[in-house]
Image (cartoon, rainbow over all chains, first blue to last red; front, side, top):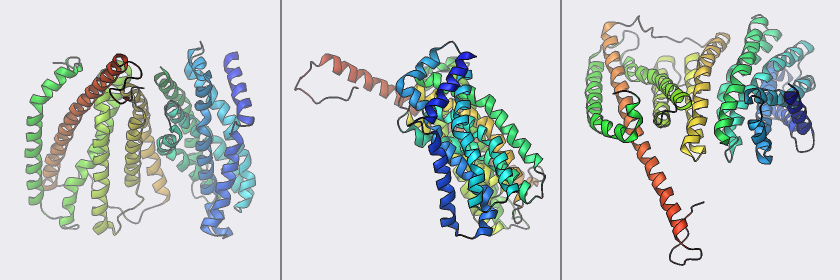
Length: 222
Length: 258
């Protein structure tokens, strides 16, 4: 347990320091949201309607951008080999790394959502709904993306491949995230149903992600 | 004759060399019979002659999912039993599956134009098949991204199995998403509700296309085995060249043996 705690603390520390790139994700998130009005026009009513979708897309792309660093930096300096060889089960180590990545790169996206909601003319209810769905959904994006990050770790240009592999798998998360936000804002469906499924998707990804990632890492590094 | 006997690539090659002409013949006969029966099938009272696209479209759609199933079983063979031919089977199935998926999308699109008035509709079934197609392409990209075949096989096996778990989730989520955005009006051909005059040609075509898949798959597996042999021979040759030729030898150019 102490080993996993140390791993989480180390990963967060590295991610938040210079060159870690965790906060680049938030910057990218901001950029995507700022670009949208240029693309669809400065119509506030339209932006309100598209708001949840824009925020979810931005968060999805931002988390994809930071995922590439999940294993590559450890692979470059050799610490990934040590993690694989240590007595801690690799599945747990992968889960710990994903948790650290979410705390450093996923949670800031959720925290940034209220500010970005202002830019898209979302009211307090809508902003709260989007932030809540992102809080429930971004862990799933991280844990599903971890599979792609583990597959891409031993390849050149792995990051390009990561996007192609991970995006189809994250479509359900996007669907239910946006659906739950829309349900909270306009109805007609209750917020609870899609939100429960979103939480369920996160829980499923907690199970599948670490095992698939650990398998890919073992195969990629031997 | 069991799966373990087929684990020897040489025996596999010998067996399939005898089998392949018969498979090809069965495919041709079945598809010819199926096309003939399809041509004889009556026109639909609503759709007219366009209903005949179904006889091509539905088998392709079935096979698009069936091939992912075949790859999933092969992936288990790679990861669990370390069967030497499992990754060959998985690798050679991916492009064939992608082709079936593409044909299903294409024929469906051509059928949709006269029936629904549009080539593309964000209908639940169409959307989930499109995502399946993207996943096939991603899988093929992964196969091509890693140079060492065995390592590529394990990576692809993980992705195939994750995809197998995810495909029902995607299907279900897209279905659900579509209840939010009701499409204009989508007619559905219920399988059991199909009249005999359509059902029999459809089944013959489906069996014919399945044989087509088996034929192409076996042929592709043979090619893949031979490709790997060529690759290992090239590596042996390069190694022999690198160890035998003294450094600075001017007799030939350097062979990339790194």
